Amino acid sequence: MKNRKLLLAIAAAVLAACLTSPLHAASFAADGSTLQTISIPGATGTVFPRGINDRGDIVGFYFGIDPNHPDPFKPVHGFLLQKGVVTVIDPPGSRDIIVNGINNQGDIVGSYTTNNEVFHGFIFRQGAFTRFDAPGVGDYESDFTSLGPINNRGDILGYSFGRHGYTGHFVLQNGVFNAITFPFGASPAGINNTGDIVGSYPDANGFDTHGFVLSRGVFTTVDKPGARTTVIRDINDRGDMVGSYYDGNFHGFVLRDGIFTILDVPAGVATDPQGINNLGQVTGDYLVQWGVSLYQGFFVDR
Image 1 (tube, rainbow, N blue to C red):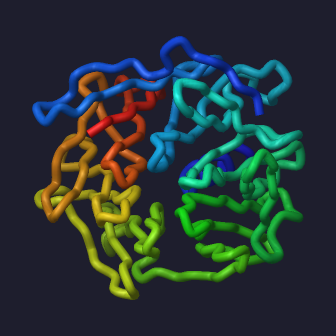
Image 2 (cartoon, rainbow, N blue to C red; image 1 turned 45 degrees about the vertical axis):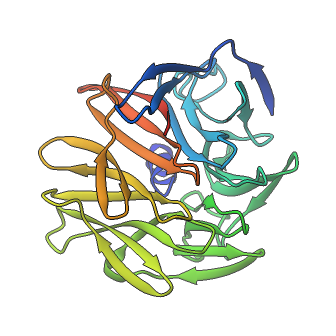
């Protein structure tokens, strides 16, 4: 049950340590973009960046080692990478932390569990953690609430499952809980500062996936031409989107002005961009090798 909930939290999904060079840069594309891989002290190799703000601060989570964890080689910790310094984002008494987003004010959102195996949402603001559970959720072992991402207005997307509480997607606006539903069983993944929401939804056949953008009440499908699967992860205020698609191979992309530009990390076999800021900087993760569950983080400065 614990592993299932952790995977759900990842999908729906403070200790400072200075690094000599957390970002390892390399030339990337003809347009002058720079690709940098992300290293986290104490990580066992797998790093999942999930959000980036306009200052270039990156948040996400990684797998580490903890002898007190039920699975000592797979505890999950949140992190903030800011100006070359990594800060571990772990609410007190928590374990298995998933960090999903950060805004320009430095507010960080995500989820965590404790020894009772219930996942709670959290907001980390001005050095203090605030727990959040959706209405009626948080009292039973199978319950979970996940928060993120968050925009500069403080709007927070979330998802919860409750045995006797609210199950579904929601948005927090000024601390007010608002249940939201999407057509076709769609799942939101990103929100910009004007309230545009992006995500993906399954095809009727159950195998293919389409991206979407919901803007001013209008739901629009977004598909990479020729792809069987398109997943949209984030959108900035200009309307640029990032995500991934499958056309026989897995690729990352940036969508700008209706043009899909492939974003593939050369060292990886599958690239999954997760966040884009208003400067066009992108963060995400890539699979290092098929058959090996090892993911690395990356940052592209465009």
